[in-house]
Image (cartoon, rainbow, N blue to C red; front, side):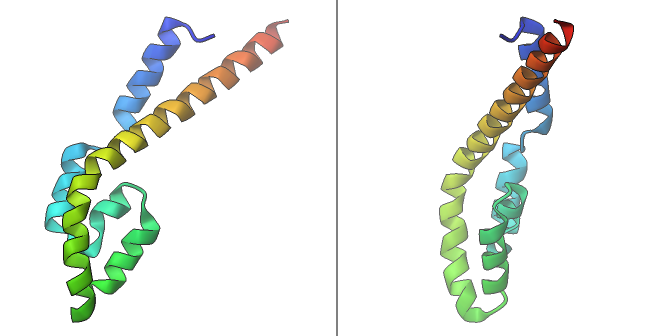
Length: 105
């Protein structure tokens, strides 16, 4: 079981490491056609696809509406990334607490 101090430390780490919603939106608005917001939010595969497509005129016809749709998805992606960080840090803390308890016995 995690102590209150462990939970506070987890939340501090999450707050420090989570992606910024503002940065994601700014990248999406100004560099969204080349997929910069997708790279920032660890969606590298589709970011590479957007980058390659944006190099051609026909590809721009695809990526312009694609990045506009992404504006509506960014908030969910940031929440998803934040929850994944919280889950990972909690699992690390539980694993660390379990090994510390086992070492003390």
